[in-house]
Image 1 (tube, rainbow over the protein chains, first blue to last red):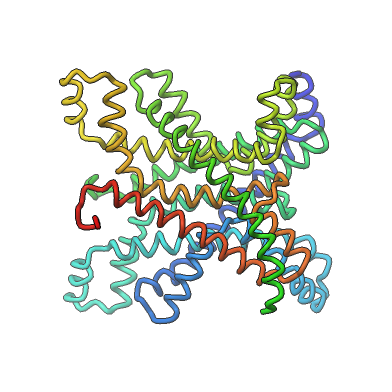
Image 2 (tube, each protein chain N blue to C red):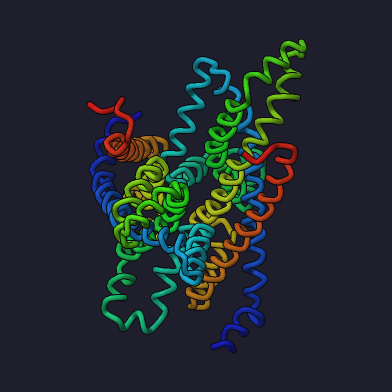
Length: 237
Length: 230
């Protein structure tokens, strides 16, 4: 039994394949969260300022994406974009490279779109939680609105948003497993391929689970540290 | 938008909705008691029980649901003992049963987290008063801890119900044709990707709204504040 596992994992090189898959998973997860967050901050500000029409659009986007399974969003983006990506790529003469990079790019867009919808809510909540008194104080010091936003509101809101961002990250790293169903070679897909070839799904899926668990556990520890750092100087309520 | 697509897709999605609701119903009906059981285990005085329950929750909350479904459906099917045991094979062998099992095990861990915080937030004095009255641990749980914790936990639990409905979509990856499974088939069949997505999204949003409203009603019924009552 142990000998079999040794042969599979080391001599046939599946350990390396799984680790490479885990690397891709982390890459998609990080890019998805970072892009999602970058897009979510302006969207959350639109919602926070209650700009007519735009704010309702952001609301609709966030409600639909959060109310619908991630799998469905991924199907929409993959099947919906296959056509015109092919057209654009062949128009520029990159048909082959597009075929290779395509699952990766659309996968990141899908993951970012999902994490963005959740981040919008987190950041809007944090912006609203910034005490009004501080903003009034900034105004009474005649800071310009821009300066107030970047020096007072945003830093305070990001501290408040940290817990929510942690939740979004934990969710996103788990959601990356969904892109495997459309052929992205990340951890889950690698495990599925290995399970199919070696006919030992139990071993490989359990290994994939262990790797995901390691990722979420380590990032939880890092976030706890970050939270402690950002909350220095604030009394623990 | 072509209207014939709606008349074509809706019957399929209605069939899928039945499966989704079935999975969600079992997820709530069995996942909730399981989660409460886990939560009491996590707040237990006995260290071993507490650590085991903590570990279970950490694992199920720390790994994607997709991995859990695959381990249960493909992984466990590899073990000879399970394949030769009639009851276990009934649980794992059928894809729908495996999906339901995965949803229950997964939501149990999240529900336990919700109820654990609710149980921990109970005022210590009430429980001490109950102990002073000579109530047995079971009676204390049934009469004092559970009703109070339920009221605390319901708002977060309604979010968890919405998550159960969404997570049930993963059953489509092991060939159970629920809403998302049908939607994927329809998308690749009709190429009307956006239309199918919109119709399917409406299905999910309706299910979620109905569930959330129902839980809201229960929440109001159970709340102390009279300002919502009739």
